Length: 103
Image 1: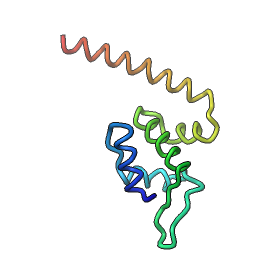
Image 2: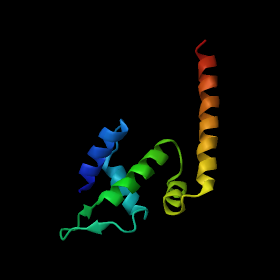
Image 3: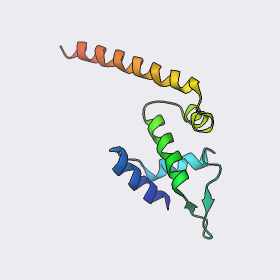
C-alpha cells in the first residue's frame, strides 16, 4: 500500500485528515524500521505498518511527542500511559479556562 493510500484510509477511519507528508515523516524520522520499499523506491506499507502509522498519528495528534509515541509502539510502556493521563488532565483544565473566557 502506498503512503497516499495509508493517508486516505487513516483519514476515513480516524475522522480527521492525515496528510501523506505526515505518513512519510514517520519513516524519515526512523519510526518505521521494517518498512519495505518497492523496486521503484516507493514505500510499501503492509497491515502491520498501517497499524503502526495509525498509532503514531493518533498519539501525535493529541500532543504526544513522536519520540514518546515511538517508545510506546516499541515497548508499550506504562510511562506513556501516565503521559496520556496527564494530557487528559491538562486538556480538561484548558477546556475549563476556555469556558470561563466565553461567559
